[in-house]
Amino acid sequence: MADDSADRPEDARAWDEFCEGLRQTGHQVLAAAPDDAFDRAEGLRYVTRLARSFLRNATELGQPARVALGHAELPKIGLDNPDYVYCSARLDPEATYVLRGALGDTDRIGFGTYSGALGTPKGLVRDGYLESTALELDPDGHFTITLSRAESPGNWLPMGPETNALNARQTLLRRAQQRQAPLELERLGAASKPEPLDPVRFARALVRAGAMLGGTVTQFLAWTESFAAHGGGIRPIDPKFLTVAQGDPNTSYHYAYWEIGEDEAYVIDLDPPPCEYWNLQIGNHWLESFDYLDFQTHVNQETAVANADGHVRIVVARRDPGVANWLETAGHARGALALRFVGADAIPQPRTAVVPLRSLA
Image (cartoon, rainbow, N blue to C red; front, side, top):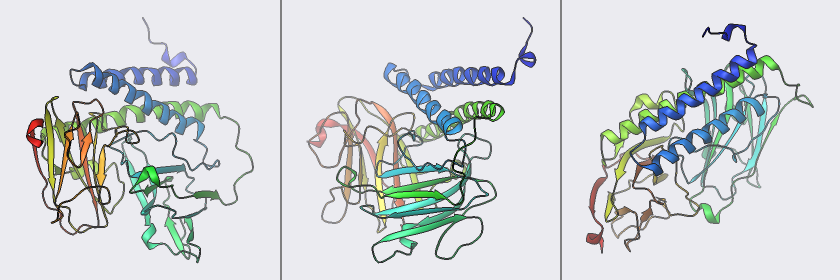
């Protein structure tokens, strides 16, 4: 049968390209899945979550004139941190923005401007970064940040010629009991109404969303493969991965891959160094965080139970071993681990082992 793609309208070609990319990405995930129906189902759910998010960003939030600073639709990617409330907004590099807020219950907030995107050849590139510890606050604890390409007095977050997004990370050490910071973003001189849908722009956005979906899945499958190659040992992340996924420049990232039976435990012995922040979490094979609101799946410097000399033993097990710092696997037999440090001068090597569950009694 002859290929009639050149004779079809652009929107039809874009739709077919997106649908075919979605099909291929789903099969790519199935091919990389462990031989377990549960992990395979989570893999396909992972694809649908990413597709929903990328479609929303490309089609519903694709007009930077409409400022929306939100977190409800952000997907779980690359072992997202349970201690962080992630917020993001689309930006126009030619515009100027004002971000207003207060720290609230947060331990710290990191504000970053970015160009590119995950899953693209350029990757996600950081153009500017500002920590809440460096902010000038008014007497009531409120702050105002200017986002612009031209330097501005006071709190200024630089933008570049291709900046397209603002990402913020709010750190809540006891998330269930704390409230996120109130943040409000305003575009100066914004039009009162958005423009009507542009058919050509929409078709291109559809293709871009599909490409980002496939690229992001490919990118993080490589992460999982790298972590699994070292077994249960915790190691610094390969620097090449961070060149296309630039997050917080002040954070040191370390990862591992674990797999345990019903009667086994994965034990991590850690001597946290003096630092501003650390946490350790577990997630699934696809590098999604677990349901951290209903299960105990991570610890940080405030929630971890340490012994008299500061040593912390963390136990990953599929059922409660009756010890401190138990991390629940939430029905999982395998997955990845992330260990983060902020402001640490030296990081001692954690020790890990898989042991019989009964040995922990």
